[in-house]
Amino acid sequence: MSPRAACRLATLGFTQVFDYVPGKVDWLARNQPVEGTDAGTRAIGRYLRQEVSTARPEETISQVRARVARSAHRFALVTTADGTLLGRLRAAVLDDADPFRAVGEVMEAGPSTLRPNEPAAAIKSRLVDRGLTYAIVADPDGRLLGTVHPGDL
Image 1 (cartoon, helix red, strand yellow):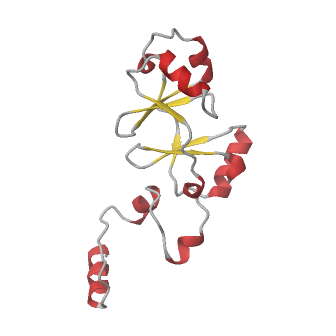
Image 2: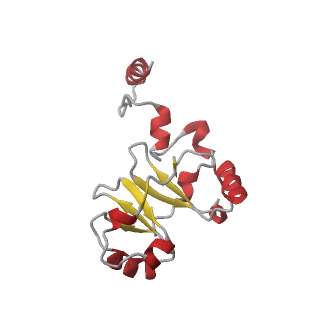
Image 3: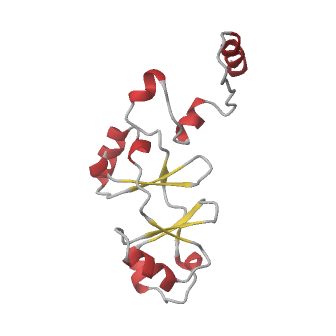
């Protein structure tokens, strides 16, 4: 239907028409803008925070400790150069690990993530029920978008 719908819009005089092949759900999961009746839906993508410290797997614990000490959080998220989320460094690891060890050796691999199109009310309830202070949000390709916190939702 998508190619036909794009063609129909073009025949009606719309000049900026695109056929987004992956579909609507993928578009929403990438935190892209929405118009129409869904525009007012409160999704967690509206409440993203980007202030979390990040680290690369080849960095040392001591390098990351210094950044985390200056941040609002006591953890860091481990990403590749293109922003793909690989893991998390919790406060206990940052405090106790050998300062010369590589982040990739001690990180918690594959932390759970959410997509930005998740409903804010449901996610807030889940975080509160589980006693969590934040959730990690990533796009469908696994790239870090930020974190969400129950108080913001």
